[in-house]
Every structure is written in C-alpha cells, then in structure tokens.
Length: 289
Image (tube, rainbow, N blue to C red; front, side, top):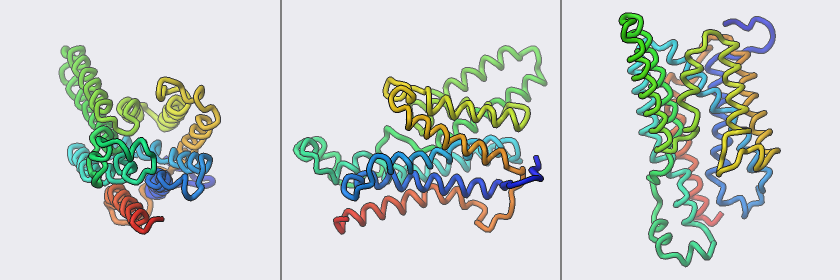
C-alpha cells in the first residue's frame, strides 16, 4: 500500500511510536507507588496511561502483518515466545504488587505477618500476571493454526468440517491459556490477531481495529462494570488515544523503512526497558526518593 499524498509512516517509524507510548505508560505504572509522594495525581496518571493505549493496536497489527510476510512462521513464533519467556521475570520485577507492598506505609500491610513474608524480598515471579508478548504469541499461534487449516482443507475438502471443528477447539484452548495466564489483553488478543490476518484488505483491517478500540475501552467489562459506566471520561479518553493508533496505521505506506536501529531492537527493548525501570525504582527506594 502506498500513501503518496501527505504524511506517511514506515513500519520502523510506527514501531518506534508504539515503543515510546509503551515506555510512557510503563514509567507511569512502575513509579505508581510514588504518585502520592511526588504529587503526580490521578489526572497525570490517567493521561500517561492513556498515551500508552496507542501502543497495543500498533503492535498487534504488526504481529498480524508479520504472520503474512514471514518466510518461516515457526521461527517467527519461536521469537515471540522467546521474548515472552525472557521478559517475564523483568515484567514481574517491574509490576509485581508484592514489590510495591514492600515500600508501603499502610498499617494493614505492615502489621500483616503473611504480607510481611511475601514482601520480604524483591520478587521476579508473581505468577498471576503475564506480559503482553505471551498474548501476542498466542494470537500469532492462532493465525498459524488458521494457515494450517486453510492448507489442509484445500487439499482434503471432504474433511473441511472436521478440520474446522478442530481449529475452533484449538482457538478456544489458546484463548483459555491467555485467560489462565492473565496475559495483557487476554480477553481479545487471540481473536483480534486472527481477524487482522484474515480480513482481505487494508481498510477493512483498520476498521476491525477501530471497532476493537471502542469495544475494549468502552464496553469490555472490568471489575464487573463496563468502563463507559464506571468512568465515562477516562473510557472515552482511552478510546480516542487507541484510535490515534488506527489513524497512524492508516498512513502506513507498507514499507519497512530505513532501520537505523538494530534488526532485533524491539525484541530486546521490551525486556530491557522493564529491567531498567525496575532498577531505577529500586535505587529511588534505597535513597529514599
């Protein structure tokens, strides 16, 4: 696809934008324990988190594009899985609530022996949360299963119904794995990746992504309530920020672009920035920031 008129972006530029948005969001979350001390406030926190909503639509879009363009789907899946596995201890180090509670002044935590035991040391494994790369891997694996279904059903049309049933069963299993692991965006990442891959043209692909933005941030229940009910202004703000990602992708000209960054920069950036942010937080704690 070529965007000959006006502003356009390469894949590398869009990924840099997504990485920057994700970094802003993660700075916000890693330093959340300090908000009450340094006066960031609710609105500043919400603004930074809203900026972070730009990242995921771009990343999941390029996972779908990567599934279309890769010459070796199995190696592509292994790369995503490897990044997820490598990132997990750094993800938990950065975001684990146990690490936050080590520095709380809440008497209910300080006087609770069980919480004192859990928070006695820095944890690199919480278990109940998994990083977004696992969700993206599961989405890409669902696409791989769809590719295999299409290849086999074309060669064995008499088995098409059976193969379709098996495909749906595998998709449900992958969704269940995302749910059990509580991966970021576990509710929607598997079907979204498949839809972005399967739709036949770019406008429709972006329309699917735009509908997902509205559904995710306005209507997907969180804590038993739809976001638009619980906090209408925040839900609308997050939706608008996610739709900015769709607008940026609309100006994607279909080329990789010049890549001044190393080939695997984005695979290293994810675990690397989590480690650095977590270390900075620990240093701030030690010097009583």
